[in-house]
Length: 237
Image (cartoon, rainbow, N blue to C red; front, side, top):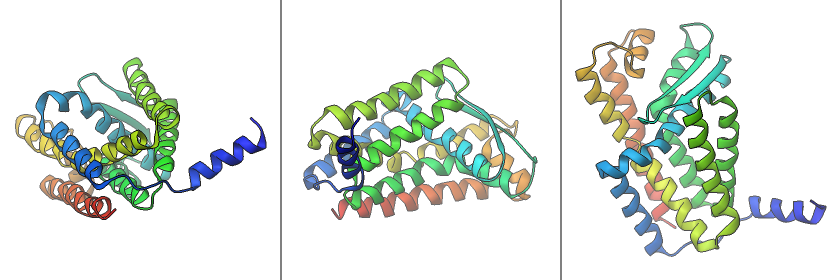
């Protein structure tokens, strides 16, 4: 790859792209919301939320000084991130809290990029994050899921027209924003059936000596505030 090609790639990454028509922004919002609300579709696309959830655990574990042993993604859309370090303290609290807050916060960050016209930067950035996450995946299903997701982002960003790239980028961001609260609702429901105390909310309750219900409320607040804030940025285009 010569200097001219590198310069062209850098210009694409740092430059801005044309705003999509307002009808497309609205249409992608409707499609994303339908995917979140539809039981059958949600069971498939929820894998994307799990990737963001476990990636959030892993990233914050590393940033807080913990040692990340690996990430597993399962076919039932559950996941597991294993890290080493002190079983208490701020680093552990931040790591445990990062899972349910990661998808909506990623959606909010994506909305900020799209509001600034950086569609290419969003697509390439997501691909890079998935590539980094792949290194830490420790099971075959997880590796397959991350590879296919990363390949989708890469193919869209390289082989499709600008209009398709914009539609895909807005759809992904709307999905993360709209889908942020549903896993929290599922967690709330599962805690009624499973009293083992193994959920993120229960773990945080033990770490901070506060009720798990407060952590559920915190997760809901992050999801709803991200949806409102991100939605305003996207619809203001």
